[in-house]
Length: 370
Image 1 (tube, rainbow, N blue to C red):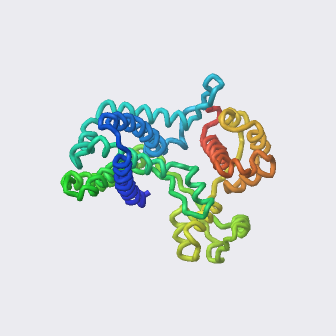
Image 2: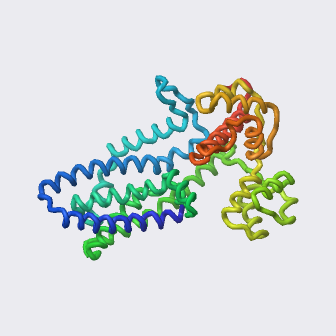
C-alpha cells in the first residue's frame, strides 16, 4: 500500500505524458474542424468521466467500506429473481451513495484546486488527466489483469486501495512537465504533498486515542490476537507445497502474526511469497459448526445447496486451521474442489472465507441471537 503511494502518482504522470503526446499526434494527422474537435472533446470528457467514476468505485470504495466487510449487518437480498445483492454489495452501494452526497455538498473547492491552482488545464488536457487517473485506478483494482499477468509469469499488480487524488495530481503534474514545468504552481503542490503526510499520521493518532479510550474506559476489546503454530499437520502440508521449516520453529506457538513473521525472517531464507504461504497455513482459527439451521440461514443466498450440504455434513468437527476445513470440504463434495473456472475467478476462496466468517461470528453470538 505504501509502495502504491509512490508508484500510483508516477504511473499517472507517465500515462499523462504519453497520452498527451499521442492525442497531439492524432489531431495533427487527422485534419478536423475546431468545432468538431470541441464536440469530440466534450463527448470524450463525459465518457472518460464515467470510466473514472467506475474506476473510483472499483478501487477507492474499499478505503471506507472495506473495514466493515467482516462485520456487515446486511443480509443478502434477492432482487425480483434477477440478481442477488449480498451484504458486501449493499455496503458498496451505501459507500457509493455517500460519495455522491460528498460530491454534491463539499467537493467544489477541492475540484477548483485540482483544476485551476496547480496547472491551468485546457479541455483536451483535462481529458488526458482524467483518462490517466482512471486507467491507473483500474489497474490497481482489476483481478482479471492480475490473474493474466501471473499466468504469463509477470508479477501481478497488487489489488490495493490507491489514492485517486494522488493520481489526479500526478496526471496534472505530467501535463505541466510536458510544457517544461513553467506553469506548475509549486506552492500549491507542496501544500498538497504535506497533506499526504499529515492525513495518515492524524488518522493514526485519532484511531489510537479512540481505541485507547474504548479499551480503558469502556473495557471493550479493540483487537483479537490470532496465534500461529507449526504443528506436525502444518509441517506436512507445507512440505506438499515445497516449503521446509527448521526444527527451531516447531516447538513454538506465536501469539500474533508479527512475532511469527519475524521468526520466519530470522530463522529461514524463505522468499516473501513463501513466508506469506507459510503464515497462511500456520494461522490458528478454531472452526466448528454448532448450529446448522443458523448457518444455513446465513449463507443460503451466497452458496450453492451442494456447498451448504457439504459444510453441514461436517457439523461438530473442529478444525484448527482454515486450510484443514477447505481440504475436508473438498473431500466431501466436488462443489468445493478447485476447477478452471473458480481458479481464475478466485470464487472458491471467497466462498471458504464466507464460511469461516459466519462460523467465527456464530461462535461469538449468545444462544438464540440470529
